[in-house]
Length: 216
Image (cartoon, rainbow, N blue to C red; front, side, top):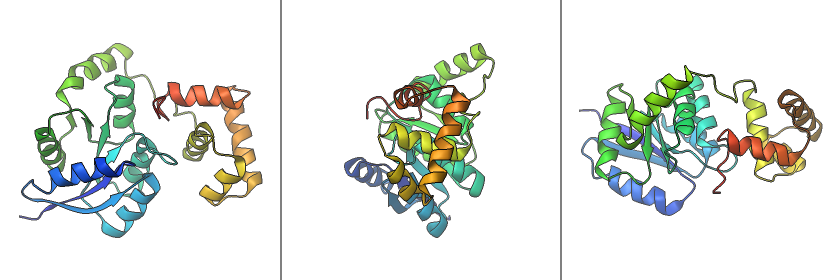
């Protein structure tokens, strides 16, 4: 039987090592690479073409949600399981909107990794049991409200995350390979669209919508 080719993306080396150790004990699973952030994950997906990516939700520079959205658009055949410490339903809903097929809590039992990988590889959606009922109830209660970040372009969301992480305009320009003027234009459009006038407000908005974690 063809093995399930898995890529791991998490900004904590020990966490990646632990997941890799667990995954490599599962029959039929092959770990083909590790990434420390969303950008590395995208590069490795392009080169390794895994079947499935297990991706941390909070990574600097390009978080798991934004990376998942890009993967879903550029590599629709690649399935994504978001790995997170957050049982908050808003995070889960955003992950599903971004195209993730699974959401696994970091404090889940080790056997859950096997169950999640096998389920998602079969084309099913997997949510940790601790959050499944809560998410469904929340989704029904909200009537499927749209993603609060949907009003922003992918580039604006990316710049918002970097601003909220404390990066300067020059640092953002270097990271995204843009001119300083272009970054300033995006930032101005971002503030205008969100009706936010200062960086502190942008940081609060990024935390409130789950773009960055307030535990980072």
